[in-house]
Length: 474
Image (cartoon, rainbow, N blue to C red; front, side, top):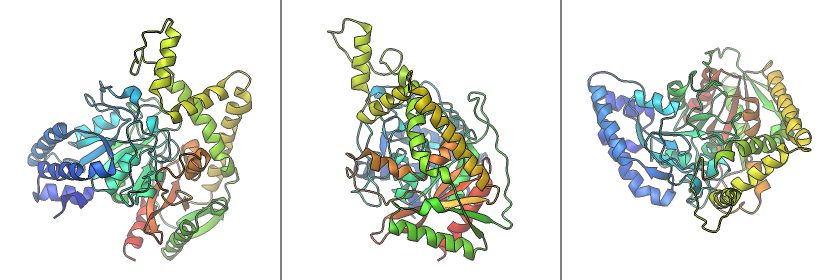
């Protein structure tokens, strides 16, 4: 049996039945990482020693009957989520030597359940990117086609799951950073409602948009991980407990007419329309809806997110936070700041900080940032109106197939468009999931995007699971 192919449910069953131990399971993944990571480049840091100790502890827990759904299951963590005493780089040279001094709340929760952490996965620097090419260390490759990107910014986490280098992974989603790489790598990615998972211990990019969530091999696994990490946290005042509602009687699914416009790849459109037909076969009522503010979502996102990033990253100056770059000729403290920030940040991060600083500056705040906040409210109202008629909204996760490494590096606008269907979900604070729904003629994965009602992840996951079970049996 190849242990690295197992889902969470299968691995947990095997551990409970005594078919294998957590140490054996962990060693199988560590061996696979040693074999494949040089090729895929999913991990920045591999925590072998810690993983084996955690696996031994998990085996003891299982022996005395202290078993949770994730006990003894090896996972990977995006390298912007803190694990105490482990390096956390956020994909930046600025934090190359930073060792976390505390655990993120999601890590605390997983540790108590006896989870095994295999390592930290690559990401676009400070989670800014749509391809995982903007890491300061190396680009990650898509395991489905090594010449192509895995998507970003949680590309390392998505690639690790798709390449069977872990059973599941955690990522963070600011504008689609879990769902878009899940789509590109042919796996499942859940972005929970804003606030349902604590952000304490996540290195912030844009605080009103960031959300931690799972990347898994299927929908059932995503539910297990979400249940394990959700809940209010006194260390994060924006976190809350979510309600449960799972009534799927008379299921109604909305199809926004704006999502099938110019710019959508033909093969992606065909796969999504076939997915809609499957929901019809399952008895769902398909209703055409309109989200007229969708066309402004990308512009709105690229004003609000960089504005928040410019404030969040202001503390990285090499004196309070981040690496200090020696400059013996520096005469004033401003020279040290300039040297540190110029050499510490990469090109994409500097671009977004400058954009954000500009839109927040005197004379431009009202014209750009304040106006973007008003548009954000209109986008949220669009969804509220739609959810008066439907239980979920269906569409493509990405307008395009996974593109080749370097193909869009000189065309940032084209790169930003890869997130066109996902950013509005973050602006409105909604839950959404990407699941595989087909392949292109060349075998590349295509992801379907389901958007749910706030705090009704249970229902969203059930709707996704209905499709997955039918699709897998076709």
